Length: 247
Figure 1 (cartoon, rainbow, N blue to C red):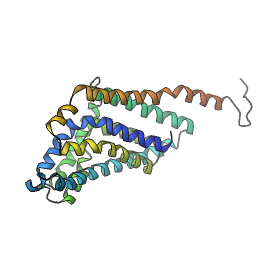
Figure 2 (figure 1 turned 90 degrees about the horizontal axis):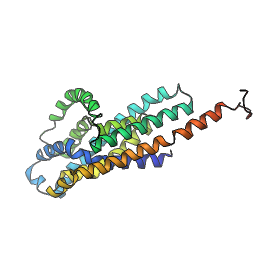
Figure 3 (figure 1 turned 180 degrees about the vertical axis):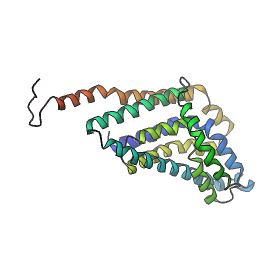
Figure 4 (figure 1 turned 135 degrees about the vertical axis):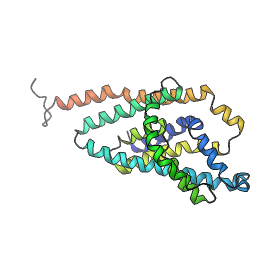
C-alpha cells in the first residue's frame, strides 16, 4: 500500500476511532482543564493553547512508541522473505482493525485485556503527570500531555500493532503521528464540549457506525490475502530464469 494511502488510512482510523475517546480520555481532559486557572478556562481563546499543548504532548508520545515498535519489528522482518513479511504485515493490520471495529461497536471486548496489561505500566507512569498539576503554563500542559499519551487504550494499541508492520522507526512514528492527528478534532472538541455534543458522541449508533467502518477496513485489508498468496506461489513455481520448475 502506498505510503500516502497508509497515512490517510491511519488518520481516518484515528478520526473514526476517537468516538471511544469521550469515555476513556474525557475525564482526563476535564481534569486537566480544571487544573487551569479559572480566568483562562472561561475564555476559549486563552484555553486553546493549553488544549493544543496537551494534545501535542499526547501525539508525540504516540509517535515515540510507534518509532520504537517500528524499529523493533524491522529487525524481525529482516529475517523473513519479503513476500512473507508483507503477508504477515497484512494479517496483523487487518486482524487488529477487525478487532478494533468489533471493540468500538461494542460487539467484542477483547481489547480490554490489552488495556488491563497496559494499566500495569500506567500505574508507574501516571504519578509523573501529577508533578505538572496545577497546569499554569502551556509548557506544563505539554509535559502533562506527554504522560497522558501512555494511557492504556485499545484504540491506541491497535494503531501501535499497525505501526509494527511498517518495518522502520521513521515510518512507525509517522503512522502514529497521523493516527494522533485523526484523534485531535474529537479531543479538542471534548475540551470545550457542550452537553449536546457529548450526548451525540456517546450515542450507541455513533460508536457502532464508526466501529463498522473500521471493521470493513480490516476486512478489505485481509481480502487481498488470496491474491497475495497466489502471487507468492507463482514466484515459487518459477525458476530464476523465468521457466517453470519441475514438478
